Length: 126
Image 1: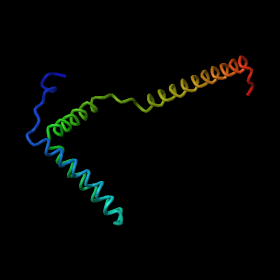
Image 2 (image 1 turned 60 degrees about the horizontal axis):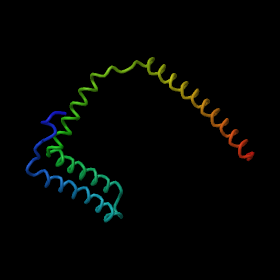
Image 3 (image 1 turned 135 degrees about the vertical axis):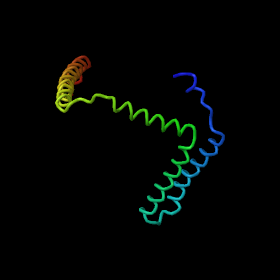
Image 4 (image 1 turned 90 degrees about the vertical axis):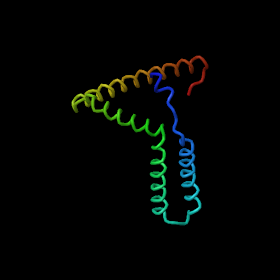
């Protein structure tokens, strides 16, 4: 991380925008409780609209712009990934399942042995 990303100036109205976002989100919770007798569909659509509005306001802040830039850069990096073929994925999954099965047998044997030793030492036969 370089110095320019560590000390980023905040917008002049960022605090106000974040307060509005928090008020909108709190309003969703209050409205859902207050209008509990209304249809769930109406409340859900209202909540989705309010979340979209709150998200649009949040994206106008410096942190919102940074989040959008990060998402774009992440999508670019995802395109650079060399994904395994179906055969490689199946083989890797088989190896993981086999190793898990072997380790479960080892741990079961170790547990049984320790259980037997403790039972022998304490004289408790279960």
